[in-house]
Each structure stands twice: as C-alpha cells, then as structure tokens.
Amino acid sequence: MNDLEQLDFALTGIMAGREGGASWGDPTAMARALGAVRRAFGDMEALAASPRGARGVLALRVTGGHPGYLDIKYACYGIARNSGWDGRRPLDDERLVHNLLQQVDSLQAVPRRFRQCYRGLLTGYFACPAYLESAPAGDPGYPNWLVLRRYLQAHLLQVAESRPALAWAETLGRYPKLLEKDPAAPWAASLLGGEAGEWNTLCRHLDLPPAWSARVALGAQVRLWLSRREALGAHPLPPLLEQQRQALAQGLREARQAQRLPYGLWKNWLTALGLEQELNSTWEGGLAE
Image (cartoon, rainbow, N blue to C red):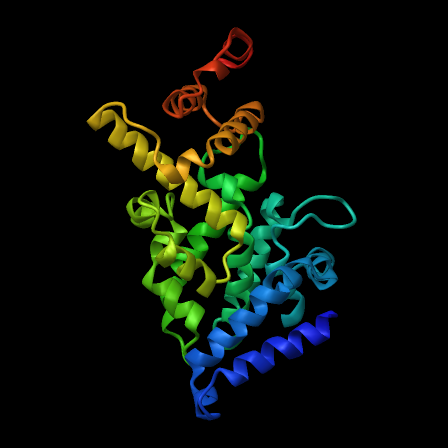
C-alpha cells in the first residue's frame, strides 16, 4: 500500500467512525482527525524538513530581514534543523534567531499567520530535548534556545486565547509547564507507577516528538525516584525503569562522554540504578571534574 492509499484508508476509517457528517462541523473533532493524519504522515516533521525551511532561512540572511510570510513560516519550522549548504542550524546563529523573532512579532496583527509561525517555533523548541538537562559547553544553540523558550512563554496566553480556537493551542495553554525546565514533573508520579495514559494522550494531542516525550518522561521519573529513594532508603528499581536499565546506563554514558552531564549527577544516577560497575578507575580518572 503506497502513501496515498494509506491516507485514503485512514480518512475512510475516520469517516466511518462518525455518526453522520454533523461532527465534521466541530473544530475539536476536526483537529483530532487532522492530528491523526499528521502523526501518521509526519506533517510537522515534514514541514521542518522541507526545502522551504532552508529557503526561508536563506531569505532572512539575504534580504536583510524582510522576507515574505511563507519564508518566515518555513524558517520557523526549520529553526532547529541543519542547513543544507553550511551544516549549521539557524538556532546556532544569535543574530538570525533575533531577526526571525522580530519578523514573527510583525505578524501579530494577523493571528492566523502568527499562530502558524508560533507552531513552527514550538516544533523547533521540542526538537532539542537535551537542552532541558544541561547547558552543553560551547554549544552556540543553547542560549538561543533559552531565548526561544522565553519568547514562546511570553506569547503562550495570546496564542491559546486567540480565535478561532485551535485544539493544540488551547491544550498548550492549559499546560504551560511543558515550556519549563522539567516539563513532565506533574506526571512523574503516575508515570513511575506505570500509568502513562494521560501523558501519552497529551503528547499525542500536541504532536510532540516521541524522542522528546520519552526523554523528558524518563528524566522526570528518575528524578522523582531518586528523591524518594533518599527519603525512604534503598528499594528495588520500579518496573518501568527496570525495563530500561541498560538503555539508561548507555544514555548516561553518552551524555557524560559528551560532557553534557555533570560528573556528580552522572555518578549518583548510575549508583541509584545499581550500575556501580560503571564507576571504574578509567571513568573516574578520565572524566571526573
């Protein structure tokens, strides 16, 4: 079955599941159906990966900051992707990020266009989950990512309350924690107990990248478990984390090797996971700070 046949099959299934056609006048129902198609066919990722994104970034650089709306929109979606011609992300260029946000600001008088660009910036923000955990030394993108986060936070209420209502904007407005330091913290207890339904539903409604949602959920669980372990004493690793013990260890090793995880935190996490064997003399001698 090719892509077009899959799309036809998906839309047919959605229509078959409706009682009559009246519900298609419901914006929320339409948004859910569109979200299902986007998740199946990677709409947000496709926009970010589109050559138009690179063209939009080039327009910002070449025109001196006066591109058209479509170039601005696609540049927003491509802000965290490597450019084809120089291998750099627009996010690594402080001047370019500043210029792009100014251009997006100029669209506030047209809410529909402003929300489209905001959604693109949001996609770029969620493409960088590693920045939630530490500030990588010498990474030019990190301070610009913080600027991007502050911009998204500052305009969240405006986007969430603008009309006509959009399901993703209203959902994000109800959960501003998603744009903060530890976005999955409110769900950590339920996730740690093996109940991931609410978190997964939220991430699905917002079309959040699976890599982002999995990483931040795992980090929130580990932090909560460590805090409880210190208070209650040693106890077995929860089943959800036990299943991912080796993946956790590998992820921590990679983070430490890239110098994106402070040595003390890395050591504490490995110890808590029962992986003290990783703390051999080579690691301690070569990587201690």
